[in-house]
Image (cartoon, rainbow, N blue to C red; front, side, top):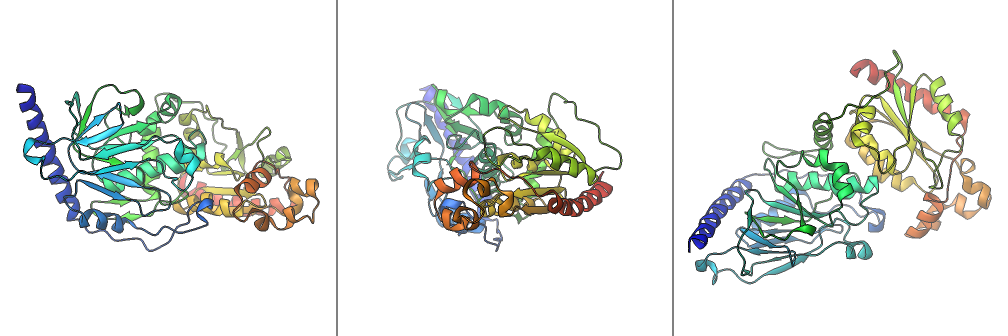
Length: 456
């Protein structure tokens, strides 16, 4: 009897919290951004069609609804269980916690969702655990109580690729929290949990929440939350649609500030090479091995970069690179240079208005624009793009300079991911024209030097 009374009291508190939250959210008027943003290659370059204000229009239109879902997007779904909820870890089901007086008033609803923002890829999504939300009650009591809403997402899919860790995980996490829970703490509930992933991003995750992260895969106890959100909102490749409102602020610069907060608190101070007086530092992102898009004359290019006036530091990150080390090096530098690839995601650690040089192999143009040019625009980098010519690609030696693969990559690719991947990403290296590239270095140096003089 005492236990039942305690549960009813907790439910009352949860309901009060939810009522206050929803009331505050409903009085906010949000202005929608007008610019369209590109989606991934598999979306055939469709643009985002639902803005931040449309998200809240949906919530407002279903005020008081026990479960609210948005499945209108090409690359993600999200759902709210808008009631005090209990998690049954055995079935990964979140059910409403109800008093006897509510049993006859709430309709039976069931929603299933895979919380990873690449829903157009059927095989990828098959690797993501399914979460169930229901208004049906379960015959279990709460064993662990949480005062903050749950935000449930997966780290399956392409997790392990540094680009996708941010593009499909960390950045959508930032967007989702600042869309659904602005200025509010949450409890992160992660499915398809990976210990190595958590260790790598623990410093950063701790800036999203003050509470211990719940590993959904190893839970045996029931958990109760005031409400539950499942799924991550994505604005497209390396894109954050900005909003500036009294209660809601969200932008790429805001995300970069979050990174600074996180990695300025790194417990270990790594040794960063001292800056050379009067020379802007350029971090050279090296690629080695049989991975594709390797600069075959890298040594000569580095020497040319030094001759142009840069202090060059070669950086070859791996899956096991300590991100505190990477942040301290890149944040203290004035620019970054590298061939299009996942490693350029480290440019997130550059200070805004730094120099960003992207070397673009043939057939990589759209990816380079959609991924890292988007990022460069979002963080106000001084962006320099070097598109290689056909004769600078190893494909010219393999197929001949006038082969269609070399001269007309767009025709070969045209929605064919396997061709893009095997030929133009993994099957191509580059040998830059030193004379031509040196002209770009002159422009790049002036931009980096100006940034160094203004920002240190």
